[in-house]
Image (cartoon, rainbow, N blue to C red):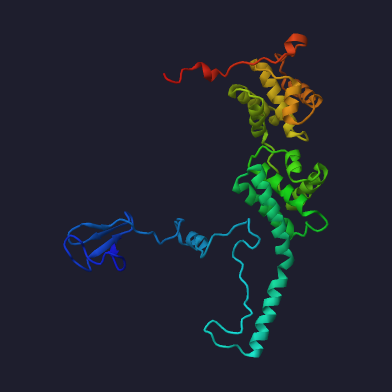
Length: 331
């Protein structure tokens, strides 16, 4: 609802010269003269919050002061420190007893969270490095920070390396947010062995009782399809095969990358856009024997009798054009 204009550079209407009759309209962001209707100013700042609330409880939950909380900061960005000054807020000198009491409270406050903040500072610095190196979204990094903070509260970091636990938290966050990164990818960038990283992942899953998302074969299929220059129809066929393998329980206990590679190999045979097992194994960072075993298991369980891989000249990869390229985009 328009209300009276109190402050600003336009005290009077430039058209009729009336004063004390300028009102503001928050919806349009304009200052209007109530006498002649002239728009005096159209640049009005919104002083309200950037969020919306539909009831009183939601308003109370979302209301805050200062900058928003950030999980990527060791103290969430809201740390305060008790001053050791000899004066109070009005500039008056404190008595010796009050000064000693404030010094004691300041020491207790600093030592209470000193070890935890120092641990978080090292871990979040490594997390920021990994996020920048892998070009991960901010949502994934914040989820990894949340996992690590829970581990720190449950005292799971003691006896384990900080780099290993933050890398394991990032791996689980990638699984949750459907980022197609494998355990080997994160272990390589984090300078942690795959054995240690896997041990840390199992520790987090066991104590935090979190379930990593197993339906991430689609993201891995599109990643391999991009590396192997496969068309979208072949990728979609591989995704459908991966959904069937999940329904039959073939993916339990198997490496997701090997399942995605085998599904992509089968889809290439069906669509005629074949790649050899050696090419797919090189892109998936695995061995042709693993892809061959997964391939035989999927074909046997799903009863794909029409899949027949010939030897000799038929094993040469066949490159076909993307069906979308046949359409004239100008039509």
